[in-house]
Image (tube, rainbow, N blue to C red; front, top):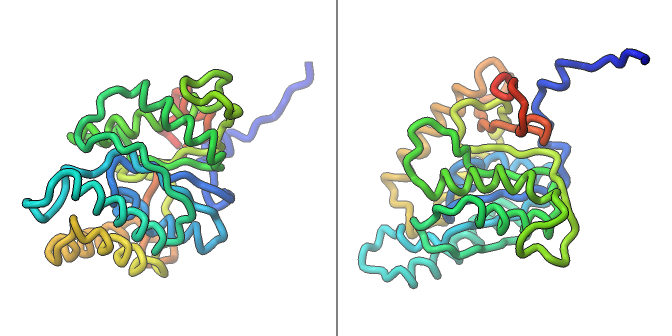
Length: 253
């Protein structure tokens, strides 16, 4: 049998997300996409990529106005999600409307996310890193784990609730809110746009919170960009389908 030569370096390299023509950004709550990867979203849009949002919960437990009802908060946050996403250039929005703070069933949520993946047919999907050390918000952990499972599940023949859709496998999954990025995106030119989008979540953001975020993300952005030839970076952990199943060197990527 003829020996085949494999490029090990390429095998251990993360996919290039800027090869994507369409992506799906999955967030547990309204505002997570902007905070976690708003600069990357803006940069992808500038490259001509079509960006879709999937919001898993209704965000009804978060409002700086403590007198607002859960129903009013959910309605307000729905509008803020669309306004902030459109400011970054997002084209389409999907909402699962699970009650905020209630996520627990990874498998059921996986099937719902897989249905959206099969409808959108993105080249890459993004979600919060569920393996972030000390992450204590179960909505984030469950959304991240369900997105990881849906990344593979969407390519199967049978997915509960996905009747009438065709199997589809995305080429990459990227995790934001990650402590171990293998991809750093230059967001120097879109940093202000990221913060303009975050500020559109007015039910969440007072001036003190925005100032704290700006200080932290400037510091972190400079740290990530160090030695890369640009000023501010945003970090993601990006994998191919090969890397996320029985691949013992995934932590090296």
